Image (cartoon, rainbow, N blue to C red; front, side, top):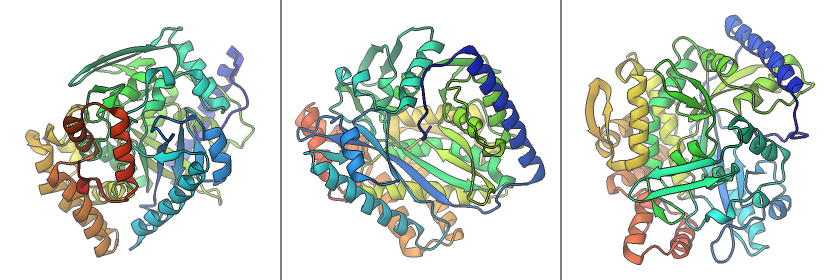
Length: 478
């Protein structure tokens, strides 16, 4: 979904032709799996970080069409709303200082974005949901100008037969709103982590990403408020799922599966399986025709980009024509600080490297539906969630992370050759201390409101200044 498209109007023939090309490209992908054509290098890691533009009153500033051209950086692109944008990273291969390098690149791009935004009396922020966002700001007038967003809006409403999108969340408060467009999606901003995986264990990476979604949701929770209501620790999860709710098919257990979903199950033998599910179960949303070569998989990748699993499989082709597989882990919220963001990436990568090399498969100990239930419990209750882990035992999230997952992440990063000082800094100095204190972004926001009341502008201003200190959230005072 990163590319723009030339138009937003389609006819029946467009859908038929796209489906034909999608079939052919899926067959081509199947042949790559059969022939062992994929790059076998493990571990390259990158990210996409969604962010906000805010004005001097810390309200959303719909100005990405003005500010992004002045940034003029290939890794900085618009998002759905004119008050959002996205920072991408250069992929980092496994190396001793990969996270330090990632941090330095993000710092340089962040400083550039902040400087250009300041020229227009704006600032930049990363947070799961901006506390000052209001329902009346979510209009088509504030949609980014890219044609793909207009097409997305039109096609989602077509598949819903014109019915309004409904957002209904029960948390500490209750929220109910209706919308006649997809702009509700723009309130949710995330950190999307990409990990390249060799084909022989790509299915394990995919399954592990789903299992680890629960602890990642808890440790990175940063979205307790929406429209002034106190909802889930990670309200972004239900808000995103409902903002583009399109019923696509029924799973074997009778559940209705939408386009924004935790998924339908683990991969059993190959990561090709979710791509086959894409082909046979999900209606085409954007039937754009490309004149690219079949082996570029342009239609397959566009279709995959319109299915928002929290763990999404990706296939890419490098400059030499060699395909590779990646897992996109879409669970973490954006923010709270740059060190927190890099630590979140290090934590996930360390866990993935550790568990994928374990002889005993974690997916054999944690059934898929249990992993799914864990995820929503963690999104709702954060670090206080109680979930079922391996052996069907109930554990408190803080205990699980500190006693089992922090040591596992450390072992994984050591195996990957990451510098010991960086492991100490990101895993023990940030992740473990955040969990031990109980203060992730959601907890800090709630503590601020408990002391000063529900002044969302004051909350956002305080968060903004804390974030720009570039100190991890567990050290923030209220």
